[in-house]
Length: 495
Ligand code: SAH
Image (tube, rainbow, N blue to C red; front, side, top):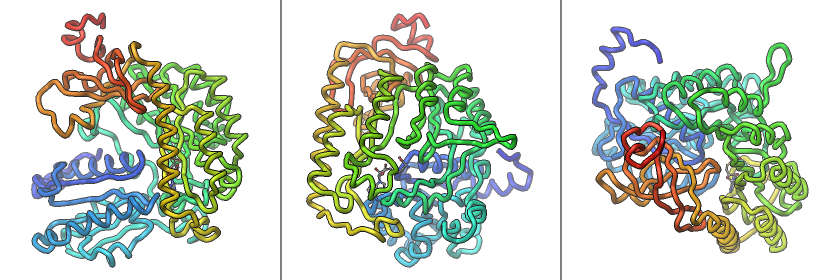
């Protein structure tokens, strides 16, 4: 973080009490982007609040992957309209993918918005905010569209890795013990349904040295779990000046060496890039979580072809078999889109078959949502009726739930090691006091809930599983370890 000069500090004084509310939808990359924006503003004296009613600045970090995600933001903006009339000094900003996609149209639909910044412009948010405050006029920063010129020109219109990813001071991170680290930006896969390549720009791999340094700092500050992020994270490939190539597997090996790090994850994977060197790394490096999220999207060749996914169902199955061969204990996860253009009942049945066969730990299932500007909209008709999409969505989820339940039942009576992440979703709404329902994850990413003291958050606990749902293991604490000597002693752990 930049040293504060006398001037900047004086300037800070005037903002000491400004409150920032930031709401994030969408993927992990958005969560990380919001963390950076919040950190940059906190470094300038803003205070974070989770109560929108008391905020001086309200930022929405948005997602464009489906229409529904955009609708939610436009309604949230609508709800702020009357308040902005009463309180004109309130600053409202729209950040992220919808900002890049809709640009000025956001000002037309919601004229009370002050600030728009695309995902490639987030490093400019503090400066834009200052301009809005000073000049009281709308400000917008977006990157060039992918068709605007040479790749270099378009790339240059997106922030660089180091312009946004700052020195990550622990006091500005949401959780001291875990962190996301960006290793790639953008996407070049151009799946026909997907808006990501056009809103997040060209695919770029970050220099390994910078990644390693960031990870080292995080671990030095007490981070025990790092998740490497990329739109297709296993496509990571950094070409050094001397022609050497660093792959994701090399990166995992290097980060793995950091003492103090306990778990290393990476999301999300592209099936075609699930190479043997990567599977060897997952097999041989004990800190690397045996958890692979590899979206299949469909179990029908005809649909995969129209999606331009670049593989057949047989190739996807070979990939799964390779995973089983190298890392038999790995938990697999997938995404599926139901009701893509032209999807027949037989295509959908093929997807169900793949799900039955692959025995995923969990699946995210989405109804196809046509995205303006994508190839699918230009080439195919969105011809599967909404009620059919809904039915297929429910059927596929029900199928996966049955599989999840069967898998989870095998954990009953067993003890699992959990990194305690925080109060469970249910207890966050109701609980006060020290003892509450906590939630955490196993090394292979299974969610575990159990009662315990809030002080356990950030440490490892051994939990004996007594009941399960399709997506959750439920149990009670046996022992704890890690940074809680008094509690650990009390519960008999040797740590
Ligand atoms: N590249 C990242 C993020 C893609 S968006 C990844 O692979 O995870 C996350 C998921 O949203 C995709 O895997 C896909 O299943 C779903 N998705 C993307 N575009 C969609 C669309 N137009 N309609 C419905 N679901 C979509």
